[in-house]
Image (cartoon, rainbow, N blue to C red; front, side):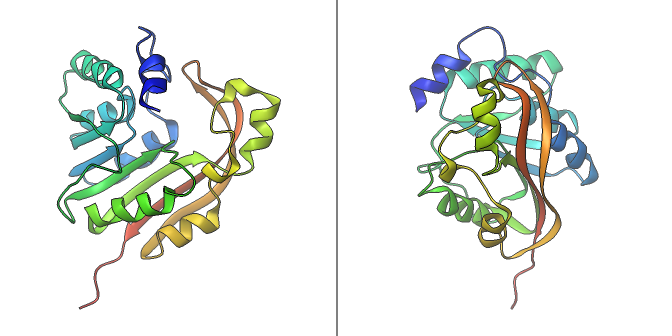
Length: 207
């Protein structure tokens, strides 16, 4: 998997463009800047956007090529971010470290995605925010019609609203929807697709 992403990101052109995901761009400014964790941040387009808004950004991804491109993009915009080359399975942070988590097309192996979401939940403080957009199970249809729209072909790696509610059951739901979108993100997200969008606030712990 690491080799796949290194191959994709070593191209001088940014695989998914330099601009942030539109849903992330719409929602992140609604919240007071603090510390944000950006798993699977790739070439850093979303982490750099968060840093431009004044967030303290910690990004990570499998790809050292992605890290190189992210640091290049951060320099272009005059911001800084911490970018770790790590696998979510191995990475460790202190509990309740972050004020927000951005999960933008962070697709994980089917048997591990709920476990990974639970792990990330531990790193978010009570009252913290998750902003999530990823391909829905309905996206398989769009991927067959147009492979250029991207996304996993394994339906079990895709998401449903029910899965999100189960994985983040301790959250106040600010938004949860399945939507058809027209993607224009670099050369790997081009065309019509189906996504799950979720914004949630982690509930305070009951004493």
